[in-house]
Amino acid sequence: MRYISTRGQAPARDFEDVLLAGLAEDGGLFLPETWPVLSAGEWRALRGLPYAELSARLMALFTGPGIPEAELLRMTRAAYGGFGHAATAPLVQIEPNLFSLELFHGPTLAFKDMAMQLLGLLFDHVLEKRGERITIVAATSGDTGSAAIEACRDRAAIDMVVLHPEGRTSEVQRRQMTTVLSSNIHNIAVQGSFDDCQDLVKAMFGDVPFRQEMRLSAVNSINWARIAAQVPYYAYAALALGAPDRPVAFSVPTGNFGNVLAAWVARRMGLPVETLIVGANRNDILARFLVSNDMSMLPVEPSLSPSMDIQVSSNFERLLFELLGRDPVATADIMTRFRAEGRMPVPDAAWKQATTLFAGFTLSDEGTLEEIRRLYAESAYLADPHTAIGTAAARALRPQDCSIPVVVAATAHPAKFPDAVEQATGFRPPLPARLADLYQREERFAVMPGALADIEAAVRAHARRNAA
Image (tube, rainbow, N blue to C red):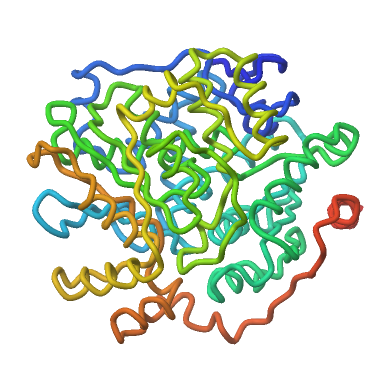
């Protein structure tokens, strides 16, 4: 299995190189040179497998022979063995043909754990084999940071710096990051938005001397391994509901487009996915694009669903590359113009192709609270604000064929957003026992303006101290 950049100017690589590189040198994102496709019979043979085994089988299609499948199975069993639910990603029925795929039973109570717990082990495996050390820089709107920290804390060959937007995460999200006092972890609260944090990470990767000096790597969903590790849970849900002999639809609350892209990858691999519904909050750039081909940046506005407070959805570049017939020149030109002009000039033909599968939906904070309230009253189901956007989107845009089940990606535990849930239901969800003392733990983080030189200096100081 070889990987190419969406912008065509980086050399093709194998999975291990892509894992460590994160972002391509030309600023593009890596994708498989050819897509693995399973026949209906091959999909049927995967039905009923435990989650860890299904994950290992599907990940093997992306890792290639460099990592033996037996080793992958060892890693997936270790990654998911400590989750708080025996099914790892349980499928819960909310109403007729509407299901919640609960992706929040990992250590940090968010879907990011589904990929991050495996990525930490993959990094260890590759770095030990190569005798190398890396510095991971990550940007987070709330959940990626804590999941990445939990996956990489105390690992001997990894230094990590996590950037989060100051004051724009929930308190639980912030504390899950800043109370981890491991020496290889450094948290920085950037005075700006998530997009500012993400731009800083991309700028560090674009600074070639700094990138090489620090041996930078990434765990944001710009890293292909993150997307690959998210594909199995869509397959897990689809197979449980009758695929490949029955089509399914997915509704995904979406910020950086990585989670819904993983569902698209599952479809590209042969699963019968009828519709992909993209749920958005007031930061609705993706929904506007799908409704009217308006991919224009607006200021990021804080909302009750902070993990979706994003205006630059990095993973859309991967879909754009496919919509343009894998034309790297056209992809690079459109992405460059987007950065320069604040609007992405997607050709109408590509936009129309996207709308044959994807549908966009926007929900206000008031609508989000009402959906949390409705779910609790009618189905006794407690949803966090992000998941509530997904369920509302599913009910609004479900396929015309009502026999097709719609699966909502439940991306976070309601206890991560207790204020919003309490406002909607009058009930304040408690944290699981393993996090019950979170509010009493010591916090440690720096607050910094978003100046690239200053952030790079902080990353260098952290990495050098640990390497000494």
